[in-house]
Length: 410
Image (cartoon, rainbow, N blue to C red; front, side, top):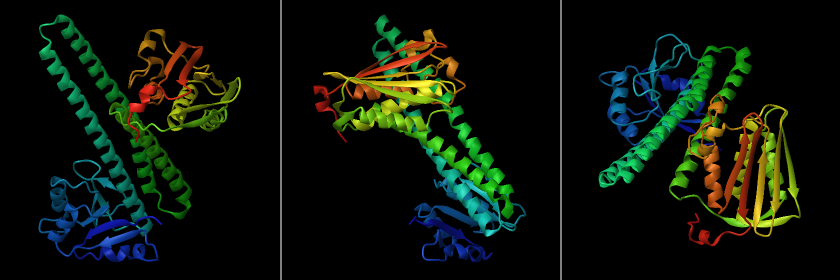
């Protein structure tokens, strides 16, 4: 049973709550409704963020609903706010600044189903924009913190030319990191957000019953775009956890080759059309003691990259071997390969090779893989030839190294 969406309705005598009554009926209604009697009561409820969405009549309050919404936003509320107007129309329009927190909603011609669609669309957009703003703020703080540390380091090392040179190099790397992130974010965030906005706009145009298949199609596009955003945000959260030494480590006995075979089957489901993940285990079966989830993340990232940067119909080979001291994993593809001059930077965060800039990605995959491998006490190497393909080799100890005894286990 899902939690109902909590609505606050500030109604200045338009009886709009009567239109919402069908949404409040039944054993488990999808919505709950509160109707404050005065602007002061509404401000109190908004201040404590007790609702998921706020519907404000255009005539609400002594100065009108628009002024009321503006004051709520200035006091720090995140909304979303819907200013209810009696103007004709069907479209949900962004209202003022900041974008994504307030909308103008003409209600005269909207059916109840259309109204519900508009509310869900506005709530979804607002939540995603807030998540992106929070992520952006966290990254900016990280860059500012590192810039401050560099400045202090430079001041302490003015008398030493070598240290000053090292600081300058680090500053260039930081600026390049910032540039790569901004380039990546502007593309990777804009693409799904554009999909969400365009699909939402098209949904607004479908008013008849025969348009239901089209509505479902665009709802699926919105869900897919949100899932893409969620994947990007998960990568950033993992990166933040690694940087703060918060990566959990839970060693357990992992059977080979059964475990790797299951991961290869999962990777096959996400491979491009006609691609085949061929798995082979060399030698006898065995067991390694390691973190199964981190090992799975390593394999899925490498196999996903092999698929992403290979053409349709090409083969991806995965090999495993358990020796007395280590587990050896090899992922080989026949894809585009990596330019020789860019190979030294392959495991850098936010790095994208120039021949892969047209392919969607954050530039974090191989950086995270390397950090995962190091977390398990192993090492990773690769060979790559442009136009021929790439081979990645991961070597992990069959038992946790002694140094892991001091690692935090969440």
